[in-house]
Structure formats: structure tokens, C-alpha cells
Length: 442
Ligand code: 5AD
Ligand code: SF4
Image (cartoon, rainbow, N blue to C red; front, side, top):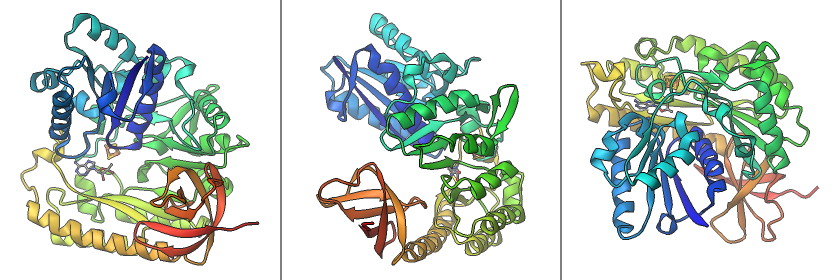
């Protein structure tokens, strides 16, 4: 038996791709190990969304190579950096054996055989006509991921936000057919999943085929919610332009759908949203939030923000601060704009100085952290259902799970009774990034 080690960077889509790669490679006689030092096959599944991704990859590759110099080892660069850098990887890191893009991972078995025979460089960064999902046998899908599982339903993006590399690295938008997703969901649940996270770069743009019809995300969720033993459904990442009636309805009517939506807005200035090609305004975004809140008062939101997009003035940035104050997020991610080669934003002459970006980021993060802490503190004294999926806490007797709002909740569980269960927890204390509670016995 040979050993496989996969390191995953970036988003949940990459986590899902790493699971697929594992399932594709294991039947070739590999078992998965957690230590690159012990592996015969090392895969780095990379993310290209922000700066220095390529530098990080080369430095990580260098480390692996130098620690394994005298051993027979196959090194694979996968993911979006591999897609973007292509042959350049062999030039800068000649010891890499295989370069494979996210849409070509199904060809890994052939690539591995080819690389071992030729001892040369093997590359596949095609965007094949037949999507990767259609080229895999059923055995590659739905294998156990524990009680919280990822399921990719949609890939790629046609929106071309002017800051983003995804349309170039992941290709055109593609939705998997409903029945294929449903089969995978059934299998995941049979293998222990209590929660399914539906994934897509633009998940609410989903438009999959069902017996000659086209179904949207709302319809798909209502269908998946029928799986009896499935208790929680989530979806990420949404775009404000793709909100639709049946999704609002699903939030109102499917209790399994968690009341927490990651809905990136990126900026609170209409001028910047236009420059980003987001094709929606702050007013439209706020209307969506209001509509959800009317429908379901206990719903919460998170978002992504970019500060210092080219042309962003102090006034534009104030718009972002005002929007955050208005919405009151349960949590949010914020980033300094980073120029991505090949995207329209990178060509602009009015780049914002690094120092200004840093100041704005600190300002925004202070506000976001304050809101997150306030939200966490508002849970103290409440009883909430928590899914404990496999994570041990800092102390030996503790276990960590997730609240409906994706907060980390820690309880004492010396006998490991709560693992893989949804348990009612009374919240005792709250901090910036976690809650402490105690299991409430019925
Ligand atoms: N610079 C900074 N942040 C970016 N993101 C995407 N591209 C860039 C970029 N060039 C952020 C966006 C997106 C999240 C996944 O990453 O906020 O929603
Ligand atoms: Fe990137 Fe915009 Fe597509 Fe999201 S919607 S993946 S930010 S291009």
C-alpha cells in the first residue's frame, strides 16, 4: 500500500475537490496519511483568489522537495494556481511531476501512471467539454465525510467581477443535474451526514436539469430536505443578483435550511459596485436582507468585503462602513484588494496605496469584530441546537460543534457522547470566535 497526502488551500470548493481526489486515488492502492513526510504521493490543492498564492505554492513545494530529496516521491500541483501557472511550475520547480487544473482532476489516475512511466513532466489544465462530475464512477461520490458533509452542485462563474480570477481558473458556470446531486446526498446521509453544505462559486445561480425541467436552488433544497435523516442544509456562496422566489420560500418553509446566509456584497458604494461589475446596488442588497428578515426574524448574515478597490475614495469606504452598520452581520470576511493578473481591475491606473488599504481594512475589521462579539454575546442564556462533528476542543474533555449560525460552540463531553449528534446546548459564555455551553439534558 502506498501513501497519499493532500494539502488543501482556500475555499470549501477546494476541500470538496480534495475529497474527490482522495476517492479517485485510493482505489489505485493508496491510503491517506496526515504527514507529507510519510507520503509517496503529495498533492498541493491550491487557491489563486488573492495575492502571493503562487509564491506560497513555490515555497511549500521547495520545502517538501528538500525534506524528501532522497526518497521516491511523486509531487502534484493541483487547483487554481496550477491552472493559472501551468508549465511555469515545471520551470520554477522542476521536481514537480504533475500539474493538474481543477476541471481535470478526474484524469489523475492516467496522469500518475504516465508520470511514473516517463519520469517526465505531465500536465492537464484543459477545460474538458464533459464536466468532471460526468467522468467519475459512482464510487467516487458520497463516501463518508462524517456528520457534516460538502456537496458541490455548481462550478465556475460567468459573472466576471473585475477583481476576480475564478471565471478564468474554474471556467464557465455549470450546474449538476438534480438526480445526480440527490443520489450523492442520499449516499452521504447513509454514510452518516446529518448536515449537507451545498457548494458552488455562485451557488444560487444553480440551474440544474430535472426530467426535462430546469430547477433553481430553492427547488433543489426543498427536494433534498425530503431526505428523512438529513437534519441541516446550508449553501454557499451566494450572489445578490441570483436571489429568487423559491429560495426565499425554502427559507420560510424548510426548517432544515439553516437561518444563516453568506451573501457577499464586497462594497457599500454604488460607484465601486459598478466598477466591480457586480450589477447590483447597495439598495438592492439591503432590500434582499430586509426581505429575508421579514420572512424569518431569526435569520443572520455574513459577507465578504474588499477594501481599496481601484478608485475607492474615503467617501466610498464610508459607504461600506454605513452598510455594515445597517446590516449588523453575525460575522464577515474582509480583504485588501489584491491585483490579479489578467483581470480588468489589475489594469487600472488608480490603484489605492497599500497604506490606505491597510488603514481601511483595520477600520472595517474593528467594526465587524464588534458586531460579531455582540452577536455571540446575545446567545448567552439561550439554548441552541449544536452539531458536534468530530472536532475535539482545547482541553481533553471538550468537544466543539457548530450552531445554526456557524458559531463554534464548545462543551464538556468527557465520554464523547455528543460526537456526530445535534444536541441542545445552553450558552454560558461568549467570546470573539467561540461560545462556551453545557449540554441540556431532556
Ligand atoms: N482581492 C481581494 N479579495 C478578493 N476576493 C476575490 N478576489 C479578490 C481580490 N482580487 C475576495 C472576495 C470574494 C472572496 C472569496 O475573496 O471578497 O468574495
Ligand atoms: Fe468571482 Fe464575482 Fe464570480 Fe464570485 S461572482 S466567483 S466574486 S467573478
